[in-house]
Image (cartoon, rainbow, N blue to C red; front, side):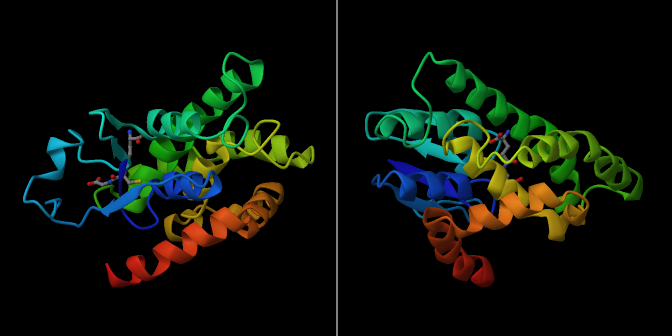
Length: 205
Ligand SMILES: N[C@@H](CCC(=O)N[C@@H](CS)C(=O)NCC(=O)O)C(=O)O
């Protein structure tokens, strides 16, 4: 399995998942020119040009973090990266994957991470943080260590996105339970290892 990534992008979640579940994967870094080592444009793998993207030797190609992470979760032993299939908790994990993708990643962080958005769009994106962060704050204030009952790929995705708060100017200090959860998650061995592996790549990029 090949996993296409950019250091400290949302694709960090796939590295956390692979480490957590002790799976085998070749991580392929997508460089800013988006041309792969064999000369193919990355868009031949991922039509939007986005990471994460997954390719298997059996010919499966997937994009969209929620789908890629669900696929990886199903490769792992049951209960390691996701609740059992067809359980209520499994649907809750899917709910959270979509929540992170739409309400946080694209709605709040995407306009704040690049340079394309002007001041008005940036201000609107920051304002949109209040509602989803309040939902997370309520969830973690109740003392829950994870988004669902056990660690899952949804936690990995949320952590990858929350890592961007400082760079994006999203004031995580306003949501202390979310900040504390991020700190605890960063101490989880799979997360610490994934971040340590990508940090030198980020610095070199
Ligand atoms: N809809 C995609 C979005 C993924 C996405 O935005 N990926 C970013 C990194 S976090 C990316 O690849 N950006 C590269 C680019 O915009 O060229 C998903 O949910 O996976």
